[in-house]
Structures are given as C-alpha cells and as structure tokens.
Amino acid sequence: MTATPILEIHNLGVRFGGLQAVDAFHYVLQEGDLGGIIGPNGAGKTTIFNMLTGIYPPTTGEIFFRGKNIVGAPIHDFTRYGIARTFQNIRLFKELSALENIRIARHMSVNYGLFSALFRRPSVQRRESELEEECMSLLDRLSLAQYAHHKASSLPYGVQRRLELARALATSPGLLLLDEPAAGMNPQEVDQLSKTILWIRDEFRVTILLIEHHMQLVMNICDHITVVNFGKLIAEGKPEEIRVNAAVIEAYLGKGGKF
Image (cartoon, rainbow, N blue to C red; front, side, top):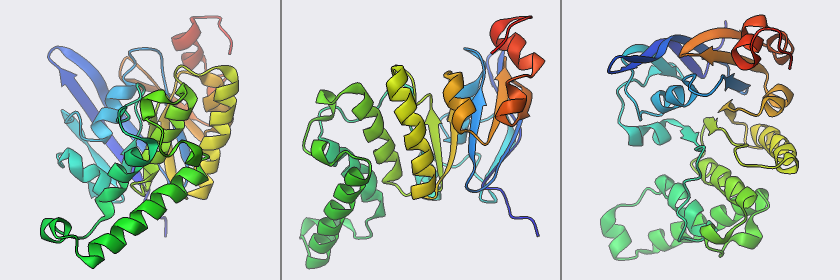
C-alpha cells in the first residue's frame, strides 16, 4: 500500500484582478523528501508558498497536508497542523533576544490556560522551566547558544538566518518551507547553509520544500526540482534532468544558454 504524501497540490491557481499569478499548479511531496521549486523572477514561487501557508486564498484548486484539505483554514491553524516557514526577508522580532524569539514560537506547545498563567501555579512554573530548557537546547543544536541573550538585530546576517530556521523548528513542524534561504549570502555562507539544511532534514526528521534563486544550492541538495515560469509548471525531475532541460534553460538563460 502506497503511503499518503505529506503534501499534495491539485490544480492550484490564484488570480489578482486581471493577472493569473499561478495557473493549474500540481505538486506532490513525499514524507522526508527535500524538494525545490525554482523559476525566474516573477514566476510565482512565493505566491505558491503564500497559498500553502494561508496568506493568499487560492482561486482554484486544493492543498492536502497529510491527507487533509487545508484550503480556507485560518492562518494560525497552519502552524498547529505542522507547517512552518521562513521568509526571503528576515522576519525576526528584532528588539527581542535570540532566546525570546525561540520562546515565542515554542509557546504554542503550552497547555495551560490564562487563569493558571496569571496565578503562576506550580504546573505553569514547571512548564516555563521546561520551555526554557527546550529553547536553549534548540539554540545549542543550531550553534546559536552563545547568542541566546543577544538582541536579534545585533546578530550577523548569517546568524539571523540560522535563528529564523531555529524559530521555525521550535514549532516542531512536519513540513518546513524555506523561502530563498540563501538570499544575501556570500559563497561561503551558501556552502554552509547547504550542509545545515541537509543536517536539519536528517536531525529533525522534517520534510523540506524550498524556493531559491541560487541554482547551485538547489542542484546540490534537492531530491527533485519543480520549475515554474509565468505561474505555470514547465518541468519537474531530478537535478541532473533539470540541468539539461531545454525549457528550463530557455526560461533562465534564453535559447542556447547553458548552466
């Protein structure tokens, strides 16, 4: 019996006024895979992510996460379902410390009510102590413990990127969506990011889907790649197949180009 994919997208589309931003997009992602969606600027990649996380309601189509159709669900439910994401532009709480950023994400796991929290019952104090330990452990696993009490805005760019990854992982997701994680990074940082993403997939047993412009990163770490252009799917396959696909090369480099 074939296992149900963690993510299935059928005939997904969204229209903004007269613009069809995404049209008849289909996608399947198996549990434990590392998938990539690529395409030129304006191809519709981030729009797809925004539909996968409830920011944009699709005009057409269905999105199944672990067999459940999540189209129309409130945005705050997506984290509860087990979907987390990062953004192309870092969206940390800049004036809070690295630890506080992680605590905010981790707090979704608390199971006490407002009354218990107000009166600081022993169960609340125990859970708060456990949360502190869990957050510090997560920071340590991502080599961020030394920055725990540093304000997020004071951290180097690459460290902020890693902290955003840690914050997403603090929600214990089954599916992690990475929106251009290599944006603004130098070659050395991109190389380290590649290793980090692979390590996260294996260490946290999380399925990963990323969109990215940095072709080498995508080719090096993704199990399979889907290519979109002008909101339409134009190719899908393994990295070695995408690298030589004529439609992909033309979309990126024009006729006669070569990766």
